[in-house]
Length: 318
Image: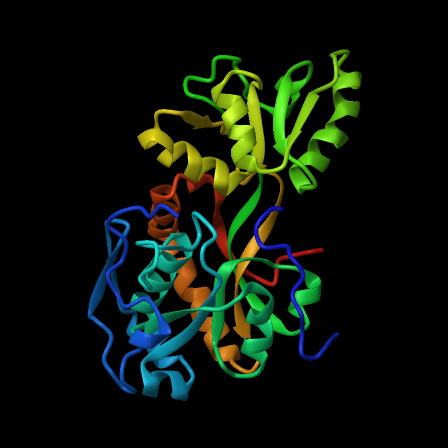
């Protein structure tokens, strides 16, 4: 699946961590006392992010008073959200770092609490959380009950062996080759649909090798049994960056599919009861885009290409 496209119930309708993440508190059990002041600046992905007084003043009064934005997230889902150490509560990941950068820009603390994915939006509706940052795909259905500020585009990507020995640069290059993919995924459907393109090009079809888990497809890639593994673009980037300290795989960067094939927007979900917060987050995110911070955060996790160039609201079309 590209990002979190799993079913989410509505009330109104029926891993390995990267060192050096932001240093603010991670989980609900470490929430600051009401009214506690946020730091003057926070270092995220090597960038010092400072408060914008105007954006802080535009926040809802209740959030300014508490000094906290309550954030729901589903952990683990690498590289977006992960535990720094297995069995402990401290968080890291792309979404966590983004939350810390947004909090620093707005002059409040984004306090993350783990929440099972299918319960995230109902919990926002019930007022337990203000927002969710959890690689959530922005869709028309979800827009009925929350608003989204979109920060990334992600779809399917290509993972190849270190050095890309087969010279794979696009989906078309997979024609006539054995390719690994996890069964019953969007990526498997993508390969099946691409067979017609191979025929159109006068090439042999993709020899699709399906596996129960993506880790099995990666083993086949290591053994040279397939020339590529098709998985989500963020997972491809993270795996290429971390497996054997970046020496096992490469992630293919197709200029025609920056965020991945059939990419869709991922957004920060915000309670519809807090339109001022949505507006402030959108403006803060745009500042992080303009000064390059968002791209640096994404690059820290091997997925610089999924960063958006404009902070849109409710851009999802499905």
